[in-house]
Image 1: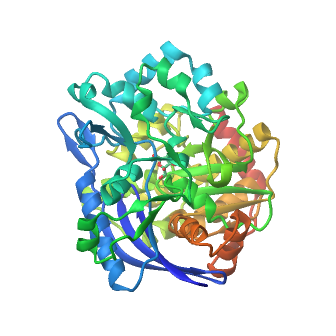
Image 2: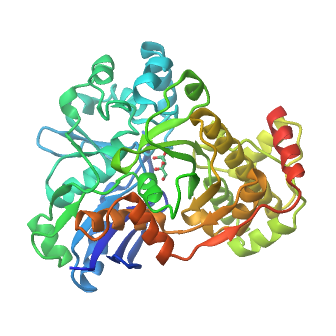
Image 3: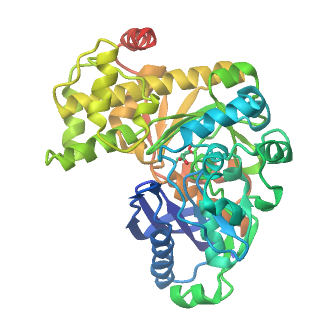
Amino acid sequence: RSEAVFAAVDLGATSGRVITGRAGPERLVLTEAHRFANTPVRLPDGLRWDVLALFQGTLDGLRAAARGGPIASVGIDTWAVDYGLLDADGGLLGLPFHYRDDRNGKAAERVLAECGARMLYAVSGLQHLPFNTVFQLAAHRASAQWGAARTVLLIPDLLTHWLTGAVGAEITNASTTGLFDASAGGWSDALIARLGLERSWFPPLREPGDPAGTLLPHVAEYTGLPAGTPVTTVASHDTASAVVAVPATGPGFAYVSCGTWSLAGLELSAPVLTEESRAANFTNERGVDGTVRYLRNIMGMWLLEECRRTWDARGEASGLDVLLGEAARARPFAALIDPDDEAFLPPGDMPSRIDAQLMSSGQAPPDSPGGYVRCVLESLALAHRRTLREAAGLAGREPDRIHVVGGGSRNELLCQWTADATGLPVTAGPAEATALGNILVQARAHGLVDDLADMRRLVARTQELRHYTPQGDQRAWDRAAARLERT
Ligand code: LFR
């Protein structure tokens, strides 16, 4: 067989999609079968994912995909770190919390005080983010559900369980929990014990490409997919799937997976667990085939999305194209922010939070939406520069090109400014890197493509890419970077 069609379930922070991909040695074509909103819900005790709506959207999406013809298998990816707790009967205990819920700060401090940040990093190699699973679990401990819990399943593993009945933990996503041993490549028994968690709560690990089970009869019946349709384990962490589909043709590349978050870094063959790396807050998340995603989270397009949501709510909505046009004409470097301020993490009025940071660093807030958009995009380009330069220094590897993948690769200003700020050529695209990575891993499991290099060649040959070379006044970016450092 030289070609087959696979279904990628790709859930993002704002929407979920089911996408089919026809893959073969010379072909890789995506079709969106179904898209649905992912709307988090605030309950009295916190911000939750509407996980039943996500599962129903998945089922409806698979049904739409099935109408298009035979599907060889299904793969699921979502954002990382969030989880559901199952009881002894396999029932879900409560609704999974959203990583932007604010319950974790205190618990994180407690865990750090008990275990020590150095020890946690030396084992897990994970950057400190207040919502790492390990801190969420510590916050969850005090709940009545805790005593009934028997299994922890990350979101893609939970949805896979509901599709197939099977239980497992996909490895790229497991590596974002803080309970994974980055050197040994497995659950860290030592950390799990140290934190007073039960080892039996953490299911056996699955590698991308492993079979994850077959559709349960009622799922097959609802979706119209044949009984026995396999679910294939993909790189279930969306960022890991996106990095699979980076169309790099040589080894010297850096990437920015740019969507709600900007994940900027390098692909390495071994983790960097040094004290300098910890101090710079770089993460060693696991990629496919034992690779390491050495990167840092940058607040990303969330800043822009949340500004737009704020303006929409006030009835001051403008289309993205209009805003980007205004940003292009706004004054350069008028206002610069550090995007990684934790104050930007929760949902809510973003322009006011940007104003607060600007004023505390002696800068005047922008006077128009276009000014805010320029502030956000220039600041993100500077954050890309800083992060990639630090990654290169800490890993001892200078990149010669940056691949910007994900939805943000469509943003021409951001891509050009990333090239200008870093002085490196930028290749932009594919925008659908995550879905492509999901499909490619399934295609490989079915013998249609080979190794990572082969998958990337296929992306480079089949997907539309844009190229940006550094231009404009490089020294102006150096001065802007120095100014931001000082504030
Ligand atoms: C991107 C992402 C990041 C992760 C964040 C929270 O969608 O998966 O990699 O740090 O969401 O899970």
